[in-house]
Amino acid sequence: MDSVDLLIVGAGALGLACAARLASPARSCLIVEAERLIGSHTSSRNSEVIHAGLYYPPGSLKAELCLEGRERLYAWCRERQVPFARLGKLLVAVEDAERDALERLAGNAQRCGVRDLQALDGTRLRALEPAVRGVAALLSPSTGILDSHAYLQSLLAAAERRGAQLALDSRVERLRHDGRDWIVEGRSGGEAFALRAHCVINAAGPFAQQLAAAIEGLANALVPRLHLCQGRYYSYAGRSPFAHLIYPMPEAHTAGLGIHATLDLGGQLRFGPDVRYLEQIDYQVDGRLAEHFAQAVRRYFPALDATRLAPGYSGIRPKLSGPGEPAADFLIQTSAAHGLPGLVNLFGIESPGLTASLAIAERVAAAL
Ligand SMILES: Cc1cc2nc3c(=O)[nH]c(=O)nc-3n(C[C@H](O)[C@H](O)[C@H](O)COP(=O)(O)OP(=O)(O)OC[C@H]3O[C@@H](n4cnc5c(N)ncnc54)[C@H](O)[C@@H]3O)c2cc1C
Image (tube, rainbow, N blue to C red; front, top):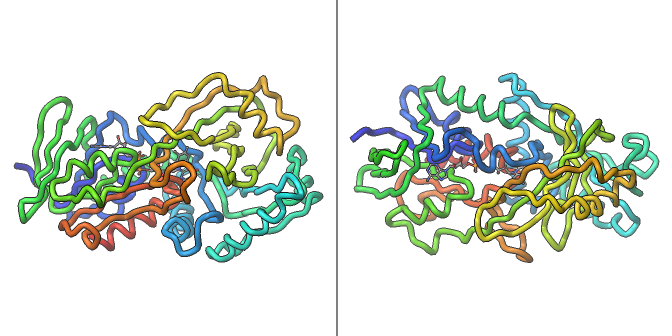
């Protein structure tokens, strides 16, 4: 039976970041990916925003790893020629009634260690973004965007330079520990395979719970319930009226960030994501949502031309909290929690997972 030191299940941002961090000539590493392309799920279906870390509870993994990951990610992009732009983000209070919420967010960001936020009044907001309606705003200069596909390719290239191998179209179906190694079984290109791995990282994103259920000896009670939460985008044709990313106040009733405006590096403007809990993965975007999106966006962009909206794409947040529940943190589950040797499960890596990916990889490396 073939054997590797480290098996990583999933070639999204997290699996690839772990491979780039942990592969070395002294540690053989195999990345196993069920799809035919890397990043086929969450990592290619997001806003591509490098988050500054404003919203998360101080002291949470999301808060800490977002800040650390953001700095690591900017440095990575600079060093590896991954396209990125530090565009800055405006968090807008549209009405006086939202000023308190804006102040609370500024306080939360400060407690999380974000020190560069600038408070703007309505006049300064209009000077920066004439098309945006608002009475006050926070400018976050350290929020940016990146080319997520180029980022994934750069992670893979770094991992491969350090000797990692990637097996596409290969699904891990079962894992058990024989006292020395993990015995890993699955199917590759339709053929059954089995191999030995000393350590295993479950970086299967929205399938992490499914994989965890196939790990012999992992107590069911330790597998957190998965809540699939779709986020849909509508694109906006033509030139963007904004130079920054524009965010309304977060929505208390959905625990979402509100339907915001983000740009990609080509200057394409998109609105979203919204919040929709699902029973199973479904990436379709209903073509009848233009008015729903237009209503949300017109609050802060009154000149919106709804005829320029078109259904875009969607992604699925692998949440650990359900509708109405307080937002759950990332869960990096190590031997200390489950007692099984050399196994790390990554659960609930929703936003800001892309931003935090390099920092999460550091935590995983420390745990292994
Ligand atoms: C709508 C939306 C917007 C977001 N916006 C942002 C943002 O702007 N900024 C930010 O920082 N974060 C954002 N995120 C979060 C970010 O996209 C994710 O945290 C990150 O991409 C998660 O990566 P991953 O590697 O854990 O999962 P994935 O990218 O889903 O990768 C998991 C991989 O595992 C593979 N796999 C699953 N099971 C198996 C198996 N049994 N065998 C082999 N392979 C398997 C899958 O095929 C998949 O390729 C957003 C997420 C969503 C949904």
